Structures are given as structure tokens and as C-alpha cells.
Amino acid sequence: MGTSIFALYPKEGNEWSGWCYGISWRTALELEALLGSERLPTLTRWEEFEVLEHGRGWPELVRVRFLKPEALERLRRQWAERREALQRRLQEIEGDLEEALQEGGESPEFQADCRLLRRIRSLRERVGEGAVLFREV
Image (cartoon, rainbow, N blue to C red; front, side, top):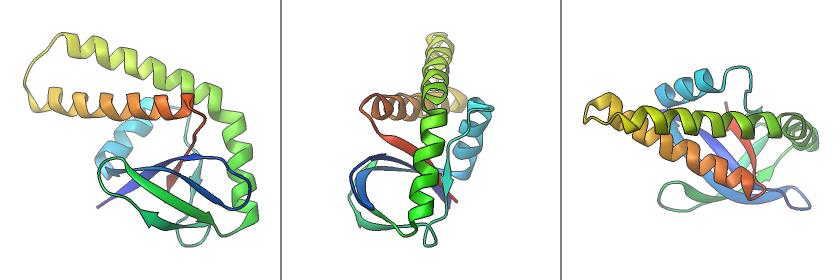
């Protein structure tokens, strides 16, 4: 069981497409701790949005419909306020993890850091492409 982070590309109307990163609660908490005060916007699935299509793989391709116009507006507003700070923080985390991983090792912590680095790098790239990030609750 876990949660998901969505990286969706804004479009006109209430249907957007992009990527869904399903992550464990442990990873979600670790990511939140790393982001510190730069939190992702959150939306409630089934109340504020629904997933219309799922792809396969990781991250999975998705198409989402926003159910409430006010939820979509809140997401746009929060993202506009937080995008630059989140992008900077993701870049900082990526650099810190790369530095820590250069020390090497094959411990479970090392493997977890490698997975976290892949997630951070992918999210940062999506933001660079214009995606809007949010977390489901």
C-alpha cells in the first residue's frame, strides 16, 4: 500500500495526461522529509480527481479528469506559487544523493538511495518539461 505522485501536463479543460509514480508510504515520507517546507500540492482521489486511463510500467502513463473546477484552480495556484522552489529543492536533493552514492556500497540503504535518486531525477525532468506535480491523499 502506498500513495502516488502525479506529473501531469496542463491542457485546456479538465482532462490532463502525464505520469503516475506509485510509491510506498515509507518512500513518500522520506521524500516529504527531504522536500522540507517545499511540499507538493495535494488532491483527494475520487473527490477532486479520477484516473481515467492507466498504462503499464513505472512510472505509468495516465489520463486524469478533475472533478471539481475549484480543485483544478487550487492546484494551478499552488503549483504557480511552489514550482520554482520545488524544482530547486529537487535539484539539491539530486545532487546530495549523487554525492552520497559516490561513496558506494551494496547495503540496502545504498539500494534505497539509488531508487530514490531515480525517482527524484525523473520528477525533476518532468517539471523541466512543464509538468505539474501533486500528491494524492
